[in-house]
Length: 235
Image (cartoon, rainbow, N blue to C red; front, top):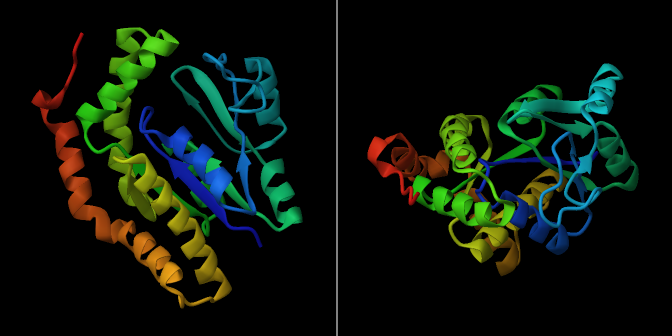
């Protein structure tokens, strides 16, 4: 049976970069490319970042019950097709899902054994910097950035619904920790105990990211979002 890994994060947390890196470094791991009704940004290509379809087609897929989960975010639909899980199981591979908080909640009800990972920025200030840096490329209006910051403040309050918390403050470290979570879960399911120094390190890194072991760090991050004076707006 395939393991299903759910990854969620506020917009701008670096989730897509982490997912792209982990797809390269972890074997036998398939990635479910979501369907969306939003338009491609920058150099994005259909079938690579997303499957870009019209709203009418997406709603027809909803009526056919073609999605494991779907949600409307910032006025656009996003959804995970059922076929990806079936295809991964046939090949004996695990499945990685990049899903927002709404979709993750749906999926956790349908797949209670799925392993869930929530990616957090180190602070609200850093998240805002990343969003504004990206906005210069995608030409995102300031009001959209503010809306995404507000949404992020609400989304991160759902951290307690996830198995693992990954704070993306240094990319290489975050890649290593995400890889450790996936490998550790595989070892756990197979009944394989950490024996080599590398296997022990993988187990330790994954354990550090467990929700119960991250609560103190999470509270310091939440404080930057809840403090009205924490905004690092430059505009």
